[in-house]
Structure formats: C-alpha cells, structure tokens
Image (cartoon, rainbow over all chains, first blue to last red; front, side, top):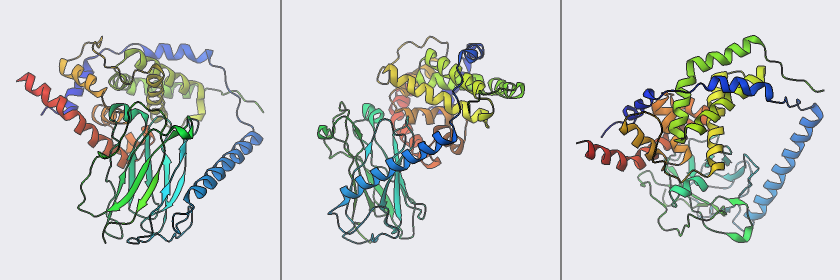
Length: 223
Length: 163
C-alpha cells in the first residue's frame, strides 16, 4: 500500500501564493486592543472561579445518589475492583467555554479530570496526574458528521493495577436540556486483553446538534 | 493604562524568518488540511498578521504561527460549513495520487486531518504536533492511528487503480 507520507510529498509541487504581502498589508489596519488592566484581570479570574464553582456544584448535584463516590474528593473511595464505583457524570460543554473540568474518582483512587482540550478540537481527555491510566474519548460534532459512532478507544497504559482504562462514548439527542452542547461518556476499566471496540450498540443520530454528557465509571469487570 | 503594542524591527524580522523557513510548508499543509486555497491563504495571512501585530507578546513565533494558522483555518471551515463537502476540483497542480489523498482527507475529522498533515507532511514529531494543536502526544498518536484506519480503503483503492 502506498505510504501516506509519500503521497503527501506531491504537495511540494504546488506553487505557493505571496501570502506574506497580504499579511503585511493587514497589520496597519489592525486596531491594537488595550491590554487588560490589573483590575480587569482580577475580575476575569474571579469570574472564572465562580463559573468553575458553579460547574462543580452542578456536577456534585448530578452525582447525588450514586454511591459514596464524590467529585473532587482527594483519595476517593473508588477501588480497583469495587462494585460500588459506578457513577454517572454529566457535563455541559457550553459553546463559549474552551474548557470544562469534571473531577471523578479514578480506578487508582485519585481524582480524574476531564477537559475539553480546546475549542476547535473535539476531544475529551480524562486522566489522572497520579496514575498512568489515561483515557480519551473522541466525540463531538465534527467527528459525528463523519462517523456517527464515536469510538471507544483504549489508550491507557498499564498502571499500578495492571489494568487498562477504556472509554465508551455515546451520544444521543437530548433536547430536554436545551441548545447546549453535551458530550456523552461512559468510561470503565477493562482487562488488559480487552479489544478496542466501537459503540455499535448505541442509537446515534448524526444530525443532532445537542448532546448529553453522561460519565459513568462501571465496576471493573475483573481483577 | 492603555498601551499599544510596539513591534520592533527585530520582531518583524523574526516573523519574516518564520515566513522564509516555514511559509511554503505551512501553506501547503493548510491546503491539505482545508482542501481550499482561499482558506489556506486567509488563515496563513491572518496568522502572520497577528504575529506581526502582537510583537513581544509572541515568544516562539514559529510554533505560535503554526498553531494560529491551523486554528483559524479550522474555524473558517466550520463557519463556511464546508466540513462535509467533498472537493472535486483542486485548482492546483499536484500529482493525481496526492489530489486523491487530499480529497480523502476531507472524510476525516479536523483533528485527524490536522495530525496527518502535520505529522506526515510537515514532518513534525508527535510532541510538536501536540503543541500546535493543543493536545497531548498520546492523543496525536491515537488520531494518526484512527486516520490511517479510515484512509486505508482509499489508499488500497488507489493502489488497485494504479496497477
């Protein structure tokens, strides 16, 4: 099979327009934005903290009734094989937010964080600073346009418990929550020999715009 | 206190050096990413113009410009809702196999497409691609793996036709 990079080499034959001139022409027309004053910066930080606190409160309220696992709780009660680890997490990815944090208990007992990496790339990363277990899920409008079945990706490396982490992403229409963008995520740990699979069993519609986020960590299937 | 950004001659030269060293490769990468010469030119011009305008705010000019250009191009594509359109006529001279590949890239997600272009055409190591795209190197490798998997049928079909 022809190598991808070999075929991309053909781009070297394409003539490049004089974009440098266009760039220079644009500069003088650009009004300089005033630098943020210290007071404005402080205000921005305070606002960001308030938003983060509201998000945390929202996530905590969503966690109610899902066992004794709590968000952002250092040294959570999650155990590698505990049957009580199941929980559901939901997070709203507002269009104007470039990041959203959700803390959940990881299989190593350390909090996991999920973050929308940036506003143009629809990848959600869940990882723990204290563990080798890092899971990712790729879901979101751009991917769904091309592939209505978000992939379940197994990326985790062998951690302290000799297990891989897996993510099962699902997305579904959920108009009850309004026009916000939601991501759906179902994460669990799997055994080392588990194969990467696709989320075939989900009823996913490619044309929807709203998505619900559901984060769930199931009990580990085996120890 | 309102302070206008002052761009020194040295900073201007630094940006111009990036243009000389990276410009053609960046534009062709953007062309492969967007399959649209207008998007490529606009994103690149805007990235360089912003770099010129920001002056000392930008430290690593090359990395900043690559990142800005790809973000602008991605946003532009999204605004124009060209994500799902297949481009049949690429108005640039390039080998048929490359043109076919650029069309096939359109079927990938923006993430996967950007990783393929930056990693395999621009020749950046995974860590650098991650820096440009604002993701982790592991994510880069996963995107590349997924992209290869999705492109495999196109590449095999091309090989069959070439035989």
